[in-house]
Image 1 (cartoon, each protein chain N blue to C red):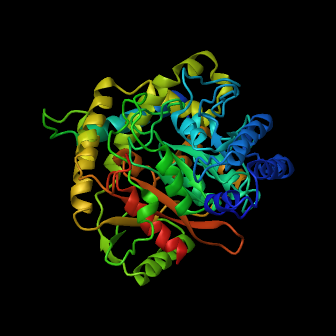
Image 2 (spheres, rainbow over the protein chains, first blue to last red; image 1 turned 90 degrees about the horizontal axis):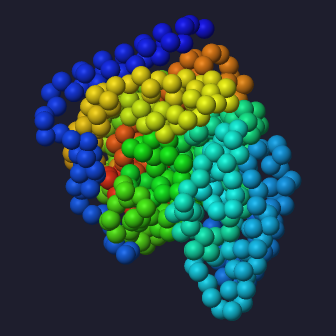
Image 3 (cartoon, rainbow over the protein chains, first blue to last red; image 1 turned 90 degrees about the vertical axis):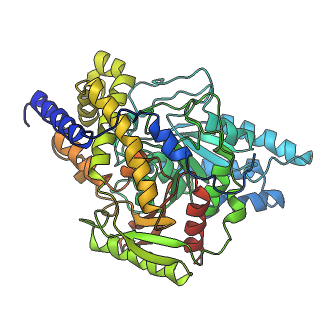
Length: 50
Length: 456
């Protein structure tokens, strides 16, 4: 088994690098709540029960 | 009774062919007889269940029915807070989680007339896709002893498959409803993020947690979803959208529905038997009139990275106390996953949350502009042997966990509704399964396709 601290460090570094690559061209207007807007922005599906 | 569904039992109760007390007694007797081997339950509440059943029977005698769940025995994952019962969340601590109010999903099922038999086994802190648990016993796959039941809602799937309960609640942060459903040959639905309240259930990752049902049929999943879905002021992420009558659209023919099959990623590295079963199911779906086409899906790896940053950060925050005060109580792989979260920067966490919105918007626009639904595998291989999944170092186990959940995890990041259902079995009885994914809040169409396929 390898050094646990080194393995955690490697995983965190890999994740940080992946985030940096993906976020390179994020606009300032992109905010965390954009996820909810992406889901709720769809047309309502089905016949309302309530 | 082990082959009954909610629909058939509800009809029998309504016709007075069986009473809620008799149904409850039969299920408790089956649990008593078989669960010593399967280990689906952490807590059996026989006394409470029988008291509820007697009260519901009295209501029926008085001419009052609460609907299709009146007198139907259910059980729930041991991360749902139920007043009067402990909630271990699969840990060594008997009362690991508590809440000022009852789990909303459980409360809605109770109000609809369900009888709760008890609390179900699960992976420790809902962190693990195989269903092994060092504290409460590894959940055995009822279809094939010695093989994993899937996780983290292992007891939920095993209880439904073993005939201990007609349905069970589970939670799904990276596949924890769909993976055990696929391993045990039952139906598991992860609804859209925000469709079902998580209030009163132990959180693992606020941004990725979903509650949903495990049942024997898609029609039963529609029944349970109709009861537990809907706005809840106790869950800030709960959607205010109206809840459709899912049962009403189940029988609508699927002719003309556009079904996409992924030409990239989702069939890479899965066993021939699993791929063959999903493709056979697609041919059957085509035979029912759906239009099946190949689609190229956005590369899921950036989304999986984003989800891992979010889940690791949030789970370490939520469960920091046990990791700080009693780390020796945690299984090594759970400790390793939690520990990572302490080292992720706030910058990366926030970037991940921002990216998630972008990925979801792009996926919905690009994929659902071409097709109405996706059909994909759920697990890369049939339920593996329990001893095999527990072997190796903590890092090896964590890597194995990631590989086993790689087909379900993207849809937690995207928040999309995803249904797992059986599509055959190997000669040794281990189930094969497929996954249907739909547009946000379009569980009705997901369930419609699943029901049409299951009915044949």
